[in-house]
Length: 278
Image 1 (cartoon, rainbow, N blue to C red):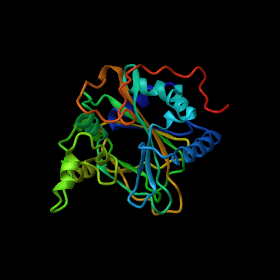
Image 2: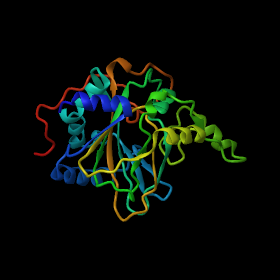
Image 3: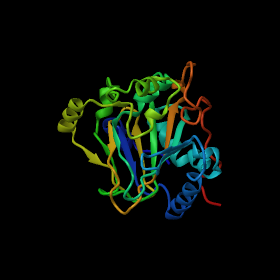
């Protein structure tokens, strides 16, 4: 899949590009079935909500050839190469699950803040392809984005304050080997409220609704968040972060686990044929 000049310009201006019908109904049904199997695994790659539901499952391709194939699909890789402007490698993948009624929220943040602070990624020359596994509407926790917010660069994120009289929590929170604080509802770095209000006032706020099978490509510095899912409809997504091969991670002490922050910087080669079904 090759992007047009208009699409490339829209991404450059807004920090995101939304494309419908990238995956067929049959492909999405197959991916949902595989997702349900994968997230049942007992693995450190599984991140739980406070209510015990699965929030995220990292690197599903490690136990699923189907998801590995998706990562290498030309319909995702080629547009990502165009948008980044170089060869790319897979930095991170995850299934984000928002089950009906109980799915939790994601606070306002920039993804690149975590990759910079936690992984040492040199620049924000990185994007995420978010595959919609369900229809996304205004009720089931859609992603909110602020168009053009990526142009501000990487902001001085707010470090979430520790609870009163809980020094043990604070010590664990700052430990380099503790990665959970970047993955739960209590995000470690969030965007200051006054900056958010200013940008929303100037640029507006978009709810990224769409049909299952759609894909949202978005820049590593785009301001985004999502609400709880209080609806009777699931909102599950598969996210693949592609990074420029010119932007690979430096050696750092105590790096995050490979399933969260890949250190295989080999350029992605597309699958021979662009399909995921037998």
